[in-house]
Image (cartoon, rainbow, N blue to C red; front, top):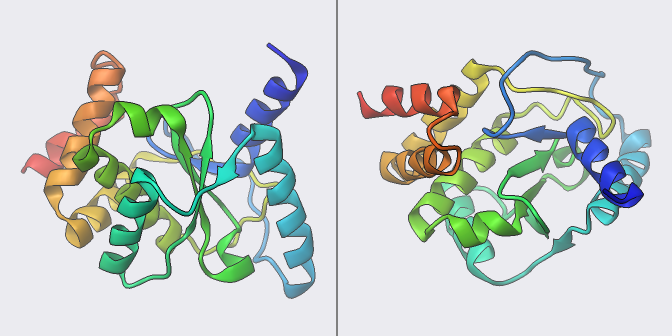
Length: 194
């Protein structure tokens, strides 16, 4: 593994809030709300992290079109969307909404390729739920791992906003891609099926 690739992996794990793929845990550290004086620092940190990952912002394509529809359903501005290579994970940048109120959602290229349109809508709807419900209290250098309740809350909000079918399709696809080994996704799917 190359040094930039290793750095990008560490930065990804340390800066953003990961979605369903990581095992849920607990808050590891958290800072206070980002102040106006720290917005420039936040922007620089995000730009460095995105550059190290090889992520690029997109303004068209399948993921952008789906996210546009989801943002409309949530009654929110369309978040910035970045595509990064070599992963089927998605994430959002923790303090990004403090910068421009739109936030940033990052999509692994493989997610676009491996999730059909309905499942991708559920995945992006889930991440959008995290983005709009996050207090933006964490800055670029904070490290948070999800707990099961935060993931279930994001699923529930996404299901209320875009419908249960896409969220259930997303969770089913996660189970297929993990050979049924993601117990959290399995439990969350069971909750949505009730």
